[in-house]
Length: 135
Ligand SMILES: Cc1cc2nc3c(=O)[nH]c(=O)nc-3n(C[C@H](O)[C@H](O)[C@H](O)COP(=O)(O)O)c2cc1C
Image (tube, rainbow, N blue to C red):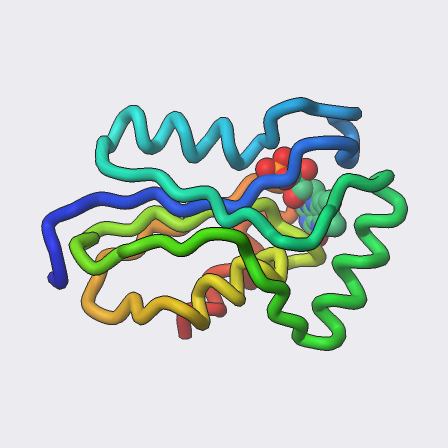
């Protein structure tokens, strides 16, 4: 194992969403904060530079297009996982997998040698193919 630290990394989208209406705090953020409070360690929010504040009907089209183009949208700040031995990684399921910005984060970080605990929130799809991102 690389380090002894614990880190929770997540992406979450507040605003208009399927079935829950317009929410101020995203579902995955709530889950991530609960994990961090329980497990301890640091927490990092992947904040996409792109503004996703738009109606749900527009966001699903945008997300589908990002996925189709395998886009890697940039995110705002950096996160040092060098001391992390256990990394919780979470996001909502978008079209059956992670939002593309989570893939950007994964492409920037070498997570080999760490214990990874994946979590998602969703509207019924389950983890879907999100775990496939880790081979
Ligand atoms: C663009 C988009 C695509 C989604 N695709 C799926 C999906 O494929 N399967 C599913 O069960 N839920 C899907 N959802 C619902 C979200 O996964 C669910 O509402 C999640 O809890 C949102 O988390 P958040 O509030 O942290 O962003 C989608 C939501 C959005 C906005």
